[in-house]
Amino acid sequence: SDSVPFTSDRPPFWQRFKRSFLPNPGNFEDLNNDASMVLRPNLFDGFQANINIPLTPSGSFSVGQGIDMGSQVRPNNYSFSANYMTQELVMISRVDLSGRVNGRIFYTHTPSLVSKITADVGSEPHSSRVTYDLDYRTSDACLQGKIGNGTLLGLSYLQSITPSVALGAEGTYHGKAGFSALSFAGKYNTEDDVATLSIATYGPVVATFVHKVGAKVALAAEVFWDAKSRESVFTAGYKFDLKDGTVTGQVDTTGRIAALLQHRFDAGLSFLLSGEITYPKRDYKFGFGVQLGN
Image: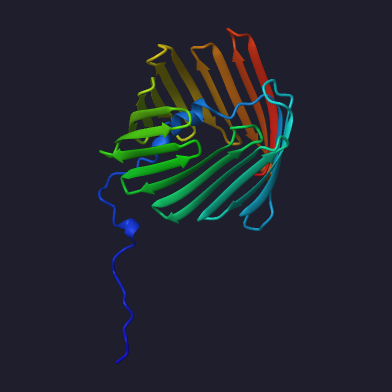
């Protein structure tokens, strides 16, 4: 008789862990991403120019060049980058005139399992860093393991306990630096508001709050308190997504005021204007830049 091929109606293993209706809360290390997008834009000083050129019709492979001039805190520099992006594999690399090489690789094994390799290699002694992360996501939780040079080990877990609340913890050990720590955090997330609180055993206590005023406006605040040094900083900021650009600004209790304007023209051309003033230190930094391509 003819043999019948074996078939199974069981779903792939990553779909067998949809245990509840609760949402996935994301990685523990991305807990404050909503606040960081408002309070920590990519400020710069001097002049920057970045050009990204796709080399394939799909845009999966591209190369780029960057120029950094006139900065008060960084030397003049030129960089070259090469990027490859598909649905499963993302590779991003950059090398500059000092010989420093930065690279990141993301590989999606399954919809629930993702690997990430990050490398920062320089010519200075003990300045190179390499880490490997493995993220495993269920329908309502995220588990991440990390290893790196210098005997770096990390493990974190974030679990949704209600549709709006997630709780988690992270442990880190760095043998070369003689450092170990535990962190505990909670996240409250609704359609318009995101609030987080994290406490670390080495001192920092951080609370953030983001309120979305419609689809194009976000307001954010952060309170940072170091339990060991008793130092604290309060930061407030805003982000406006305009028709052809984005405006982001912050002010904090150290006397620092900062803003970043990005205006997008046609054909992938953007103009950037950055300003940062710290009044007590009489420190003023201004920059302008252009970007061509994504």
